Length: 205
Image (cartoon, rainbow, N blue to C red; front, top):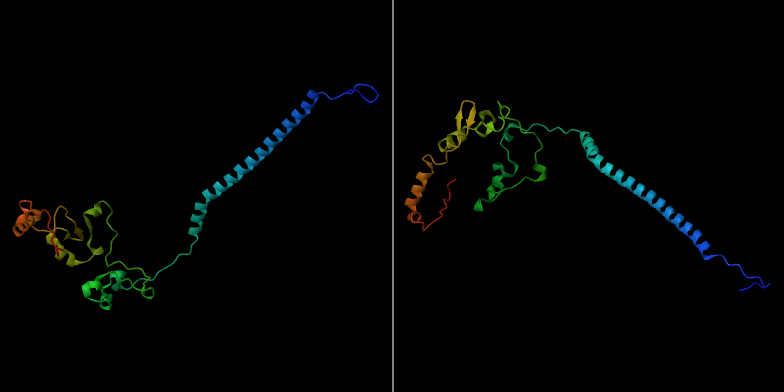
């Protein structure tokens, strides 16, 4: 092509156009990486703050729980020594004797609930620590002679001095299980030859 005046027209070289485009592309890429770095660093900073808050929460909760005002309760009267709210014999007369429903669990209504501390029995001592307590306890902590009178012949416990001892190895049968099983065989001959494999002793306590 020629200019209007007859001179050849001068067109910019294609290679010269590529150079500024490449520079522009590099600048845009660098700028995008810069923005990405700022965004990621801010995101990590926020996540770190959230984690630190979550870690500090239990401490704050623990500190807050220490500031709760203490509540004091009055002492119960001595007749509450063996009180069990939902199985209170004093309430049995309110319920039917049909199928012994009066002995079922009957919890008192809200207005009858007690909020007091049951006093320890006279002569109470600090409990014996485990594992020694597996075989003995202080009698004054559970001062019930009827337990000793009714259960001593069954080898569950026996009173010696200031303690209740739990002999262990015994059974509720004074003459041992073997003698009891022999009596069952005499009563149910089918147990001897295996015809009857299972027997339920109802009312055995």
